[in-house]
Amino acid sequence: MFQHYREEFQIIKERDPSIKSPMEVMLYPSFKVMLSYRRAHKLYLKGHYFLARWISQRAARRTGIEIHPGANIGKGFFIDHGTGVIIGETTIIGDNVTLYQGVTLGGTGKETGKRHPTLEDNVMVSAGAKVIGSFTVGKNSKIGAGSVVIEEVPPNCTVVGIPGRIVRQNNEKVPASDMDQIHLPDPVKEDISVLQKENSELVNRVLELEKELAEIKKKM
Image 1 (tube, rainbow, N blue to C red):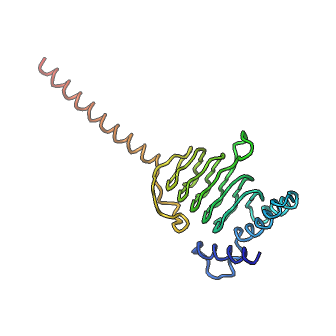
Image 2: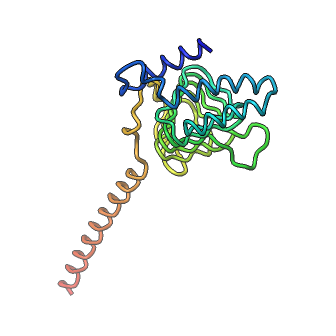
Image 3: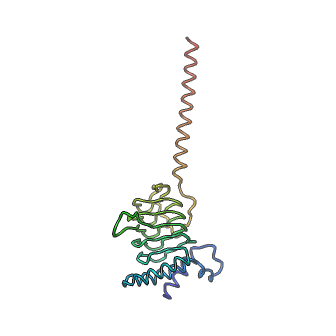
């Protein structure tokens, strides 16, 4: 437990620029819930399911973060703010993954066995995003704020929108050290720009045709 305590303390201290003193770390929901999760997960693996769930539900009431004790979470995991985060039973999370508030790693309700997503190393899931189903989000990928992801995401991708779609691939930056949730591509804005350009071209073409028609009428 002391090792987990030290690891969680260091992770939060490194990744949250708002921390002014080390003592603030102990106030963080992420710090509290991860210590409870580590205890509950050990009990879950030993078959003490009720006690494991009791610890996890108690932590959820205190922090607003619900992590099922069956979830498998690697090293360097960080939840910023945390309120409304839900992590399902068969979720697998790699190393150095970051989640923001309101994130759901859930199931579709139609699957059995492995029902929840797998997040590989260095994935970042921004505020309010939902990742639903038993697929994999590849390493170094980013999920934009408010996105709903229901399909496989290859490594080194940026996904935004509802439903989520890949708007950038082979980005080699590591999300654990790049916490920017804002400067992501906006596919809706890009689509609108394309439509505006096409509309402008059509308007110009109509004006040209009207001009040609007017000249024909004059000659007649």
